[in-house]
Image 1 (cartoon, rainbow, N blue to C red):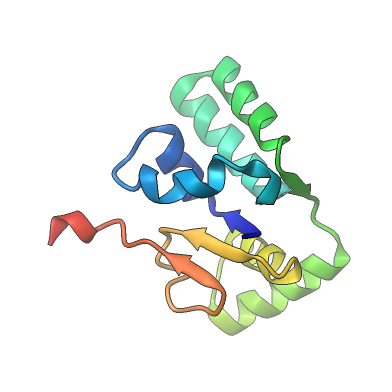
Image 2 (cartoon, rainbow, N blue to C red):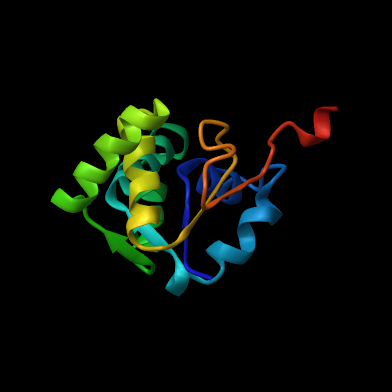
Length: 129
């Protein structure tokens, strides 16, 4: 299944978080994963801050094993429309627009995407009930 795994899913998987197993099937097969360059930015920044530059570069190299999708005019305009329609931030709109543009499912635990078409949402608070 072609998908985009949101940044939070990557972080959950990389840190063996509570929902890591939910994201593992997608991230174990990067050939089916589209990776917007904004996710590369967010991951590199987060990993460098939390784990250092060497690990951040390893993660950046890992993302290159997937299908990296640069931001271009078609995705930019779609993202702007999506941001206006759903009140999403720049990064979230680009991530969602990339999934829509590629006819891929967005897999996330970010509640900004909850209920949007083409989204598989995992509730990060499921175990706190």
